Length: 217
Ligand SMILES: [Zn+2]
Image (cartoon, rainbow, N blue to C red; front, side, top):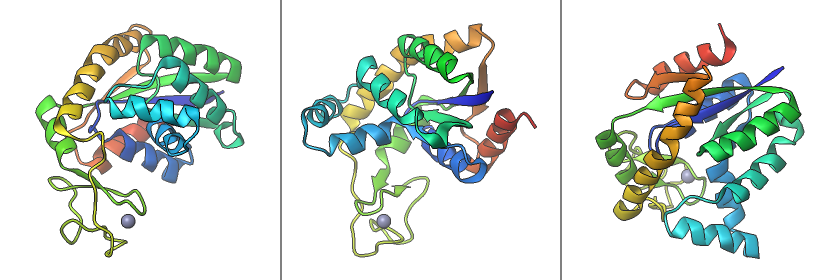
């Protein structure tokens, strides 16, 4: 039986970084719905435009939309020994979709939440910048580039703020996260499958705890 790791935490809590470490070091593919949806939105077809409109409004994609994308992606061969979900499920309805998917795949679900105080989250999100060439994420407060406003790997290209990182959209996203995700955390808590990690630790310390939970070692 393989593991499905549901990695949760508010936007800005660093779950994307941790998912990437699990992929690099334990070989568990990172299924980031944010990445998948963003990539899909860049295609100009009707589905791409539908996703783009949702993202521009600062709201979250519908259960149906995300569910379709996740089911398709986790059917691929690299997910056979388990995978890490980043950004899915976000609601109890999506959690129930995942129970069915896990049962079909013969997988076991473990949920992990990275906890972080609200004021730290807002500051992190306000300071986030991305390289338009390679997608590397920097943070002017927590993880600045070597030279102001330019990527360490692409000195000729200026870093940009993602369209969903403006103050108003940040507020909407954190509110939406609270409203929708608290019931989800309660859902996994109730079934004894929720683990909590303190998110104000250094990324390597967070990873160490995460690895222990994932490998059971
Ligand atoms: Zn770059």
